[in-house]
Length: 240
Image (cartoon, rainbow, N blue to C red; front, side, top):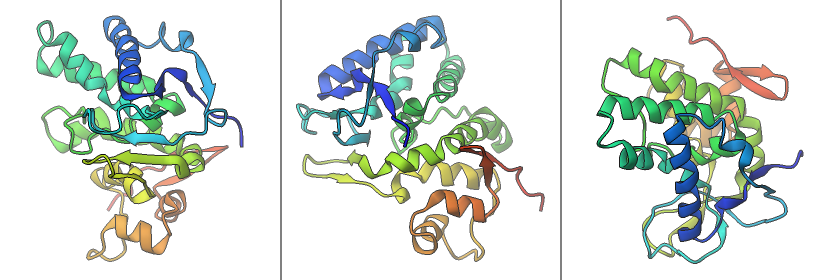
């Protein structure tokens, strides 16, 4: 497997990683682009620092704040920083659009895409503005799913290191595809891809029970994705 590099600022304790990401995000928010930010980041191989990859966490002081981990979940807090810095100068729709644009720009990078696997997990971070389902799909679900799918094989290769913090200090666990793949399956459903042959089945159960959590095999079998070199791409939504 080709070496995977993440920004070194995400390796550390809760306070240092959040502060570092805040500085980086603030510059991108001011510029409305990552173009001048990403090239300046110090990168480190995740193999060289073999700590767990925390992709879901909450900024609570009791959640192992001093433990040293890859706290890549900080990326999913981008909307919080946009809201804090632009509350007085942008209305709600403008902030949502800026958040969406920065997220989709960032998802051109694998590390960023891993960091937003937890976007929208009941934390008010899903950048969906009000409107009809077709408008929402074009605004976020479709382009986000395209980027998740592109990186899917790479995500699966490192997913054995994924952990999540939930509510209590001891509630730290390695997570399966049924957790980290939730957005991918959810967005595919919202866009109209058929993900189960029996309407009584839930797609996440199909993924777990019929495919043993192999999300790429699942999506290939149901015609959601197709190979694209070393990556994947979305197939068109079937017309019913």
